[in-house]
Amino acid sequence: MAKEPRAFRALIPDAVGRAEMLRATRATRALRQWPSVVGPLLASKSQPERYEEGTVWVAVADAVWAQELRMAKDTILQRLNQAAGEDLFKSARFGVRKVVPPSPAPEPKTLPDYDRMTLREITERRRRLLGAREP
Image (cartoon, rainbow, N blue to C red):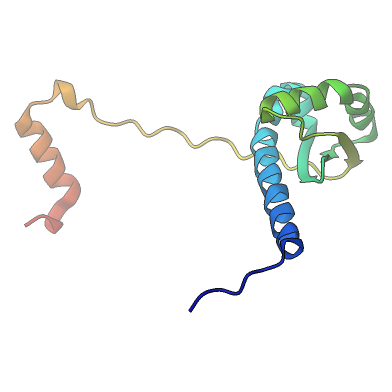
């Protein structure tokens, strides 16, 4: 059975919603680069919270750092837009709120140096690691 045709007017909200969702996704990707946008010192005192219709909302540790960010707002917006690849960020709002430091990156696991091991050593290591699970 064929779908009923929809009026063009009915399609506009869907298209606008999708476009805003794509912008928000690109903005979120740019906000993940916050430390490189504002530098390590400001990144340790601030954290972007959300992007909403062209505005980035930023939590700042205290009023002094909020003022520092306000003075650098134009540069920050320019760098965020550069990171996004388009002009998504029109304004920034800085509010004093608790800043949660990002969790440290997990320690990389060191893998055995297989190119220096013989096939027998690799097989024995595999058997030890797998234990009784291997037939």
